[in-house]
Length: 100
Image 1 (cartoon, rainbow, N blue to C red):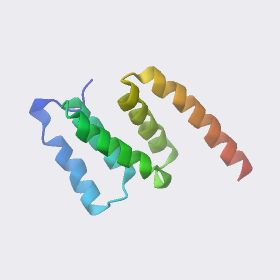
Image 2: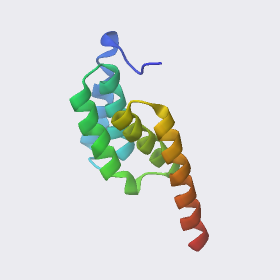
Image 3: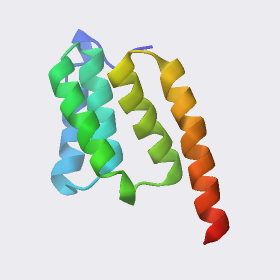
Image 4: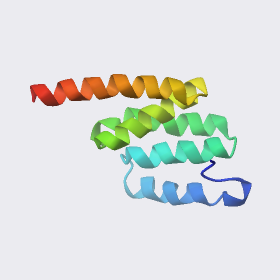
């Protein structure tokens, strides 16, 4: 399912407004990447997805999953790669929480 189509071109502006309010809002960048990917604006989608990944440190654990899945999908064009990497991230996050 696409987040937006040609008829939904206004949707990215909602997320754009979010990052104008908070330039470190990682999940808004991830959603912008998703919206532009659905509009077949792949270069723009890649830029926003990479920015989300760079800012993921302040994101919640659930948001980190989404950001990583978005990055992997963007890189490989398939969710199977994202699922594999999500399992690795889950293992890493579990290990970190057990040592904290």
